[in-house]
Image (tube, rainbow, N blue to C red):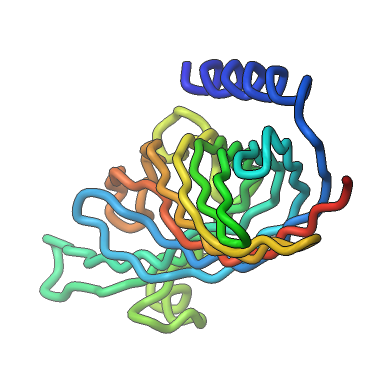
Length: 223
């Protein structure tokens, strides 16, 4: 339902704006600093990249609509405690979650002189992901040797147990400076969709959502 509302909103906004807007096209590139939030979730930052294309539909000198299509690396380092009732020991472990998305943001941007602020929704479509599990903070072969198990596996997407949601809906806000060709800014994205990630030792499904910061440069060419 959210996907239908999102695409309908994008269609209406772009159709209405394109009829009277000055259009510029370009590329976006930057770095992502992401983790996750949810009930009883302890995470650390994961750094990644974002690359893609963007457009700017200028409705007037101050207001524009900026859609884009970008490849974005996200994820988190998940810290959990494995409580084993059959043994006298507990194991602290780290699950490094790597998720690759195609994101479609649509921002409304307001500019005063060179300074701008922007906000709007985005849709994320997960294309691939991996989970790497290890004891403590080490990401070597400790988990494999101790438990006799491979410490890295591909993440599966879907609605079945043990899979996570492929589609994500969220909102983003940002600010920065716009020059003749380039925009330099920082954005904060907050995912609203529960990924329902199943952690790999206890098999518990967590209420977990993406969040993160993007530092990016957008180059726009046109009139």
